[in-house]
Image 1: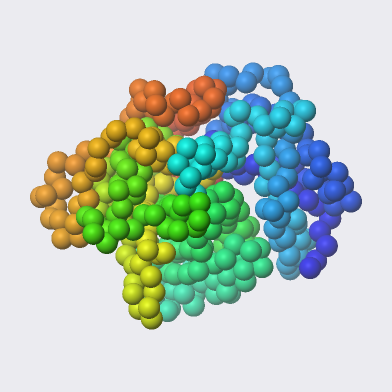
Image 2 (image 1 turned 60 degrees about the vertical axis):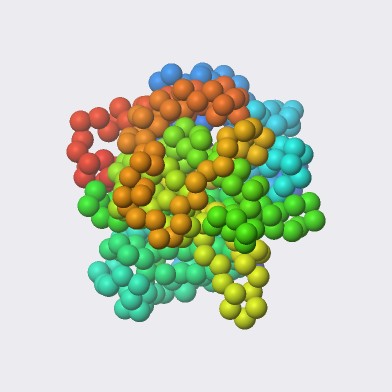
Amino acid sequence: MDSSALVFVATCDLAGQVRGRAVPSPDEPSALRTGTGWVPADLAITSFGPIAPDNVFGSVGDLRLIPDAATRVDIPADEGRPGLRLYLADQTTPDGEPWPCCPRTFLRDALRELRERTGLVVTASVEHEFTLEGLPSGPPFSLQRLRDAEPFGSDLIHLLDQAGLEPETWLPEFGDGQFEITLRPSDALVAADRAVLLRELVRDLARRRGLRATFAPMTDPEGAGNGVHIHLSLRDADGRPVLHDSGRPGALSECGARFAAGILRHAAALTAWTAPSPVSFLRLAPHRWSAGGVFLAERNREALLRICPTTRIAGADPATQFNLEYRAADATANPWLALGALVRAGLEGLTRDYGEPTVWPEDAEETDLANVPALPGSLQEALAALEEDEVVRSWFDPRLPATQLSVKRHELALLEGLDDAARTRKVSDVY
Ligand code: GLU
Ligand code: MG
């Protein structure tokens, strides 16, 4: 391992951007104990830089960023650029009490409440698509495009492996310059931490290789979208998977159907957390294989919630692979808040009476699906849905949705008057 002079302690904000502070490496033990300083209003910074004008935190207050030792990642020294040690942190008050607006604490609390009220534990995996700029064009999924991205691809897999992120597949995706990386499923907090880290590791490696990686949901209004697909499964206290029941529609258990019902019921407000950029809703339209409507379906890439395929090859057990995929997320979302909000919505479904959702079979025709509810058509509509959904707002300290609304409305204002091509460019520049 290279020794790094700097240790960066980071959080991820409402814009899904990673920010933090570095300390000299001899101070790492004390930073692990007492953290580094931080400022509440940092949560009100827009993705484009300016702070939202109606920032509820004002200019006062102080926080600590307390690194979680389990999140440690070492970026090795590379071609003249020194190495760096990186930690993700929880935000606390100066006395070390959890800060009620900390996004990572929000996810941890959601997982704890799910466990306490239902005995269930979430396993998750967050799948990312992104665009690598600076490479020749080539056919989708081709060996040629995979090879043209070398040594970036091999270096990335090596880096993720060394960092403990458990890379699973690396592929040249459908869009021009588009790639996808998947990681193995893990405990849900670990999966969200990995999503935060993955985006930074990809962008950092691309810069070192003379490329530019962007996770913007759209880089060109006519092109393919960059999705973030969140895979979820539930286990009971003994570690037994509980989503699978081969006797039911889609082989989705009653518990799974109820969990899905909560996500479907609150879908519109959820997108204000999971797809929160001014261009996210260019991607979330029908026929883009992103999420074309609010429905649950077997193996359908237009569904908001897709029941993923399983295999029995070599004696594999479908129950242990069975998972639901939420497709209306992108990398402008904060992974802790996105996953936490999905867990909260699922918990509402498990504990309220939302009824059984329709499980659309694999052979459902487009005409069959014509009347499924639409997702919000724009970020403005998603934010209005969040304002109206009292259940969703009740999951948060009121300052969090208030800040989400002001940050996101200011981002919209900063792009006002631009056409879709210019808006996608502006968002690509900062993601
Ligand atoms: N690019 C699609 C999206 O925007 C996903 C395609 C796929 O199913 O991998 O979500
Ligand atoms: Mg894909």
